[in-house]
Length: 134
Image 1 (cartoon, rainbow, N blue to C red):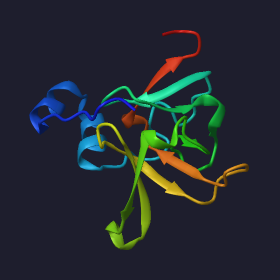
Image 2: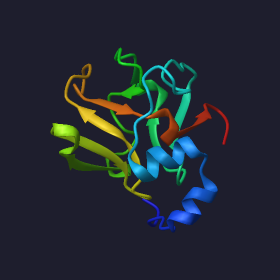
Image 3: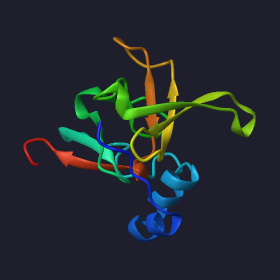
Image 4: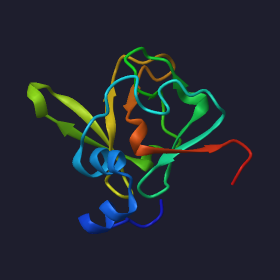
């Protein structure tokens, strides 16, 4: 993995659109069925909106029903950091970008085979790179 990305809050705020800043840097969650990738089916790579790290391939994306993009495996396990999240009276696993520590979403164990995992990710935390384009 490339070196860590460290910026001030002011730098992040200046570089990211407001919805992406709120999700990546403040841990917000976009409303279901509103993000640009929840019903997106083009072949390619989903990367961190904050630092560009490649996170998920379209071949691992699936429709899980709740209105956020869902993936059953990351491109590289070390691209993600998993953190225990006890907010809102629940116990969950938060998914962050390992490189910039941006909040991406949460991990659940109700996904499809072969991993049975569901990475439930906010569209605002992602960029998309179509297949065949650099």
